[in-house]
Length: 529
Image 1: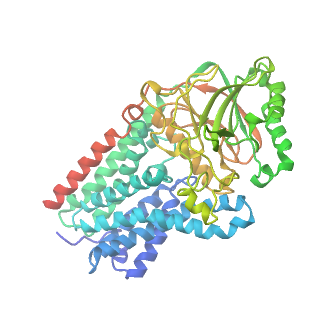
Image 2: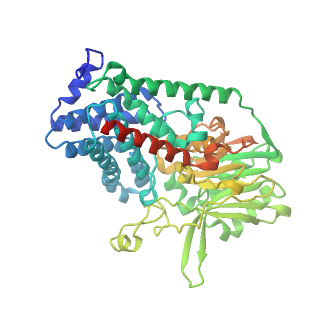
Image 3: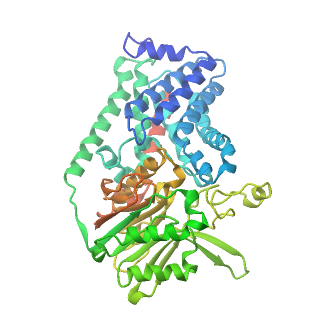
């Protein structure tokens, strides 16, 4: 049987398959924008179902043209362009925060980033149409092609795994618990496959049951994920680490105000006052955000002295800071760092230093820096010349607390960044300066990804983000306590206990490789059959 029976899906499928070349591309662009509504902070997952199923039907239309591979590639590119423009528009705020001179660059920066990332989807569209057919297995080809594109997007040229398909599920909810064994990449693959599956109900060869099998399998699989996630959450226990009491600081400071030298003392006092609020005597550790103070703290004895007076024999301070380093050859380097400072007997002491390893391209350093600097292009950091990366991700020890993995800003968006095995931490401290996101969805999407790291690794995440989402995330991805977005405040909390090592923390994407190869073999089998 080759023609579908009349159904609620037949009319939209027919309409999408019969659009002209440019109509199809415009629709694909609109569907890409629609997909972003499934991500934080909206989490309208049916929009992803509509967008991905509709894209399959657009591919069905492209398959009937004289140049199917080319048309499929362009459809996927326009879809990706819409998705990345709507999902990464907040990058423009980073330019506006640097001053009026950077504002004219905003439309070019946002467009060319989105257009460049959409090239991964373009390649996926070409590959998918190369192996397209009218069998229901085409949804498997579709999902595997797009997943490969997303994997490359998350890894090539340092990677930008922002708004992956698996991130449409609210962290801390039932379905998100699956990343404890599958990781966000596994959940992304499952989501692409299940949300493309309804397209096979229309315009597929075979019996009605053959057409329905992908949708039935997707529904049953996600029902299983939902049920197992509910069971995992029902069995969750809230346990805390004895003897550790945290105070997380969230400061709302405009970047132009922060970096004005005239406001330096004001910014320092703001952090000291927030940290010294009533109840400090019971606090063992303070957490300040990335680059909290607009100065070189380790070279500022006056500021360190002020801090020592406030925190003498009190809490250990974990703070993001900029530090300067001079090499043996006399070269001056700047690092984006996280330091632990103690103040025993009123004497500041550096207990730990971590230098950010995974720097943000263009934000913190310039790829091909010398060549671009010669043309007048600078990194967005106030240093202009940018930062130098640290050697590697680490698990480290600080006084009075279990082993911790320090992660600065967007290091927390990378699945698998946290050390495993003997180096597995008991918690992650994620400090960030989300002021660069401006009044956008960026801080909420950033926090969503930090929550996924907690579930994957089975450890709590303590997050201090200026102008972002600060709070305490338990090993199940639940935000136990948080500060209202945009407020100057502090959070006092115990440190949740880590869970036993998750499957993902032990094996990372080993299972994912097996699933991908199994699905690829299935797609090849059905095509040859």
